[in-house]
Length: 193
Length: 193
Image 1 (cartoon, rainbow over the protein chains, first blue to last red):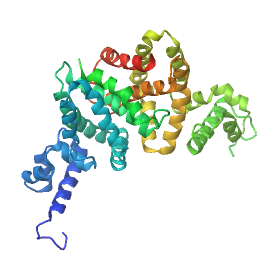
Image 2: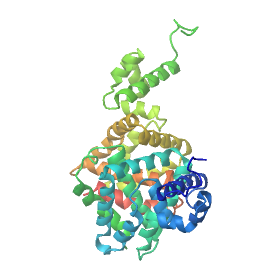
Image 3: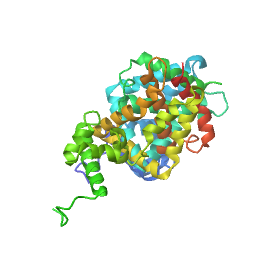
Image 4: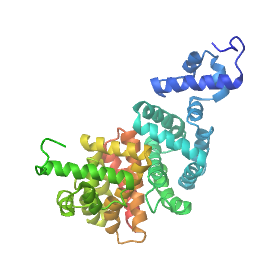
């Protein structure tokens, strides 16, 4: 259709083509029901190419949401460190994400679509479970690891809403160390015995 | 303008007129900068009439948002009871609100507008501080009562996002008693010494 049709698309074009098809697939079928293979089929590329560009469904979704590429791996790494300060590491990492201007805009956009659009909420639910709470739960050698991970997630999401989105004082302008000092023990209780 | 003009408006009309003007005032100026007196002026009614129908700015805002009329008084009552199970009472009350179909729809609409519209976020911030966290903080005989109230609010808002809005499992379908058993100690830590 383009004047260049017949020429092999560049890497950037292919990557964008995969992203476009992934966006459609996630919003029409939800995150859980979409596979990398299905996205490859829609984009008419070899499945190996989707893996080459994005590595995993979680990383493809993160790229679509313009979130840091290695979010899932970072959560896994933070969760698998010494259990005694797991809560502290996770809340510090979470605050760093929200205090980065670019990432904050991406997270805000994700929150907005999740609360206003059931399909977006469905995709976000799949991504959170698969790429964030999954690795966190996998690092916990405790009963109810997924419930514990979801509880930790609830406290972090609540901090995001109150501190960064609605901006309720004095939590909105409390310094990071104060927030860490209050929130880390909550996460620690959810994520340890 | 109506064929009835000249006739004194009924109570229901006056109440709606006040609500309409309040809606405009809150969205244009925000919650904090809007007074009941100003709303009365815009609605061209006696300020005593605004107080007669709504009692306080918090109750007027709650009426606009279709939230339970006595929300603020209920929070004050729950917070002022025995400190030892304050967390337990608050989380049970919060879950009851979200598990009521009508209230849940109102809360969802409020969340939606707060994340997508800065003016709505601004009004919600004012309402939360004035009508919910204010009475909660006032009941705490501890240092940093407002920060503690905001932290408790952050955990509750996070439960709403994860359990009711995004619906992340297993928190979404955990029974209420499980949620209470996990969340009450968090609130208790924030709201006690």
